[in-house]
Length: 169
Image 1 (cartoon, rainbow, N blue to C red):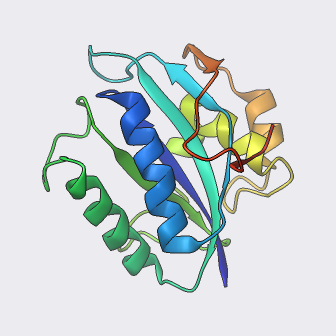
Image 2: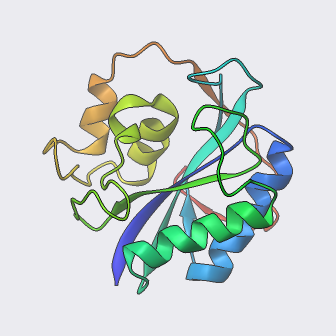
């Protein structure tokens, strides 16, 4: 089984799509753990604020199968098959890590967004503080401590669809 981390984001009907992502990921992987949910300003374009979090799961699926499943879920909730990187999104699911794999195909692993975006690194550091990033050699907690970009995000109270949601906080 592979340990994976998935970033989840939405800035269109955010509550609905974050809950939907949680339920879809539970159906796909069984038990998952989630970070707190954060609200953050749009990065790379002018748009509505996002809700972001990271989920942890174990899977027997391959990297390619995980990515395909995430695209299917995104499309189910109205995301076009092709959309610009920097735009509003009903649902955005990205595979951040797959065990300690480093690869560029079918997706880049670990995702570059881990080192660049607070809305990915902070929730990842919550869920996996002692896990080591396979390229930097630093724990996610150390990486968050060293993070110096000026990106604004703040934790929010989130009404989960299930009172048993396992969160890191």
